[in-house]
Amino acid sequence: MPFSDYIVYVDESGDHGLLNIDPDYPVFVLAFCIFQKQTYVEQIVPEIQKLKFRFWGHDGIILHSHDIRKSKGNFNILMNEGVRNQFLPAIQSVIEGAQFTLIASLIDKEKLRVKYQNPSDPYTIALAFCMERLQFFLKDNSQGNQEVHVLVESRGKIEDNELELAFRRIKDGTPYVESMPNLNIVFMDKKHNSAGLQFADLVAHPIGRHHIKPAQPNLAYKTIETKFRRSTSGNIRGYGLKTFP
Image (cartoon, rainbow, N blue to C red; front, top):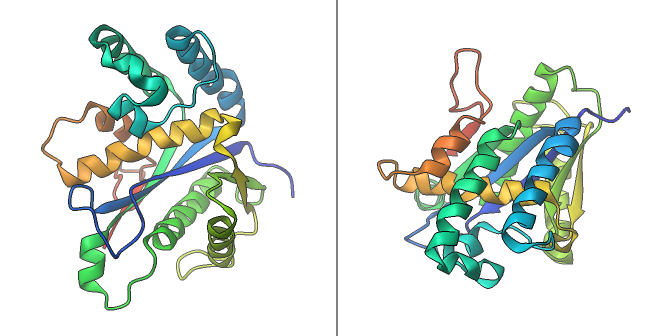
């Protein structure tokens, strides 16, 4: 099977556990960022590198949404208001100018727990929704019979094994999509400093925050919203963003 013209990077926002749900962030979001490989190499990676060189003088920094919001670790430079006022618009500009397609799934964990007596794992539910829509996207772009690599951050041997098993079960087919032999999961350590994984990390959290407080101004989400996969009539819901239940 030939390699696809596309590459997919995945990250999540929130905890997928159902026992102790955080009342401030009771959702789990899984985001698939789909890039054309040529665009990724020629545009995405250079823009991320330029951003890092501009603010740190080197590219050893790993962009992490949580640390940016909290000004932690390498992002303590953002405690300086002047630097922060330059950095946030700069990173917003990188995302706004990037050419990619976003597919995401949001699981409202409290509603899931109330609606189902024995609910499935939110990560597995979200993964199935995203894989189905990814396959639809690939078929729409004549890539359904080409090998597509789906890159996720390694979380440890046990967690990776569980995720790979869930991925392969979904890959065998769902009630809505036939088998997806063209999809292959690849685990990558965060230390590899992947621009794609960092990109996925940056887009996941604003989706969850917008769902929780839709009336609250959310510039990051406004930008991200333009990247969602859409229906021919422009609908996002069910096409680029699946909310469940």
